[in-house]
Length: 379
Image 1 (cartoon, rainbow, N blue to C red):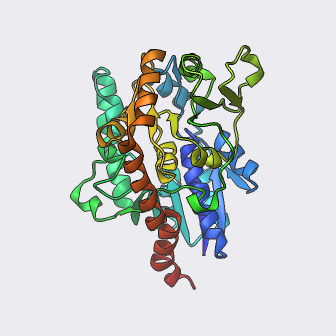
Image 2: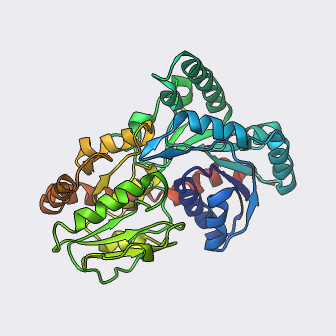
């Protein structure tokens, strides 16, 4: 098959899971084209693949740990490209794929339908209208319009892939709300991650070890610094802080001996396998990566970001880790870390999810579904 994968570039989680699917498809000889923009396109090219430039659909901005909703709308409108639709239509026509997969990128879906190409949507949130609640009448009306639009798109696609564990283990379950008609299209693939646990070698890290994926720039910088303060409270717990591509670790002086700071790395999986817990925002893909490697999560969801807050709530509810906030003081963060390290029940539950991720094998499950649905129709 020839496949084109369109990727929403807001948050690198979409990119990470699309790379996992692309790698799986290419491993058996399928031809894969990526469509991406911004950091997403850069990451794909850093990994070694080519990517077609596509226009962005949305822009998310924030400050001090909070999603700036009004600012995000303004940024989206300012960056909108009037000719985005025709560009995507031309790209799809030029590539001539047998199937289109869209990870939360809706222009790609419309182009596929216009060209009568089978189209599959990867999605971990369907209740986007939640963003618009309690924000005044004009915004709420915009939310209702958004809900109608998305429901129409859900009915257009051939299937909807949920890159999560099936119920009752679904982490993003609070973010899913479909009509009965659309529910028939759902396919829970299991975590869609780039590396399998068995493929990754451990690295020598002092124990107990915490890996933090909170970037030290932008509106998440306060929590990055708070984790540093937490590390100073107990020298017997070791930390690797991955700072992000836009931050020079050398700006942080007087680091305690139990902390190392690394810039953005392409492959965090050896750190997942070698650590005892992960500190992360509430993004779905990072949570899936951690749980598929069997490690508990200490989640700091962006405030006002309903999807992240819901993911973190399920982590807390199911005992896969703890939900914290940007206002949690270092002393309480430390106690939560100790709790996760000392209470074996957390590790027992996440180990169960590691084994389940192996059995489900998300990338392979999606590939086999596409081959069954589309491959047989390919001339």
